[in-house]
Image: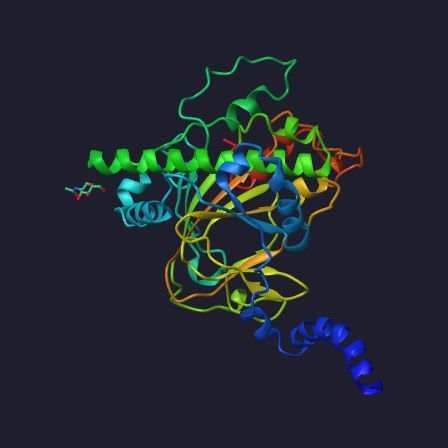
Length: 363
Ligand SMILES: *[C@@H]1O[C@H](CO)[C@@H](O)[C@H](O)[C@H]1NC(C)=O
């Protein structure tokens, strides 16, 4: 009798202890088990229609894992996007050069939107990818007035660079491509904004959405990471030696990601990189980066992630939603000085430096 009682008393704590022990002794096994099975899967319509019953589930998932999925997107088929992407990157170089950023093709005006073929020194760098960048503007705003009282006028103007779209000579393709990614942009923008509203409700930060009423510089990137023909020493993780396709990093703003059925994405969870389920045909993955994390007082992790090396051309779509141009990013929702606030007041200043890396403002 005494023994039975003892067993009963021990059984409950032991049951809780076993997964932890498995995790410590056989981390690869835990990775295969469902580490991420508790991640929230939020239906698209509930999210964008501000159904507040999803808020706590979404916030819990963000707090625990640093991301969640948006599922059941009506009239959306990721494979159509991926097929168009493949066709785009397979176009002849002279067709793509027509819409290449001016750093690559000095005859062009576009500095940021459009095609960016990636680095020339392919074999010796890790960050090898082809990119095509789409934003929210189709037409150029009227030429900016030179106005000394508004030091941001030119910057604001530069930020609102219109899109450039491929002209292949095949009108069916060109129209289908443009319509597909304009629609895809809208879906991702809806998700980004609705996510901000949801966490604003859940965290009781009613002013958070007012920083996101405009999205002058939201950006959708179609990415192709080509198969690498040669491995170099820059491709190994400093963290655990894994061979990588994309370096370990955290993002800056709000990210809405499509990985299609392409494996490789890993996030850091409990001090270990673990495989993240793909977004497949009809879902998106949402996470936040450092800048937004600081705005909400670091109550949710800006999750560190990377892409492990895979043996195929890997396609993904990123969408980044930043605060509006004039948003004060120097203080968090509770008034604490943010990291960005040590150098910048408004988001426009921050984006200027960010874009400086690709020379937008130095022509
Ligand atoms: C034009 O594009 C459409 C849609 O992508 C494709 O089905 C068709 O085969 C293309 N036509 C030619 C002549 O390449």
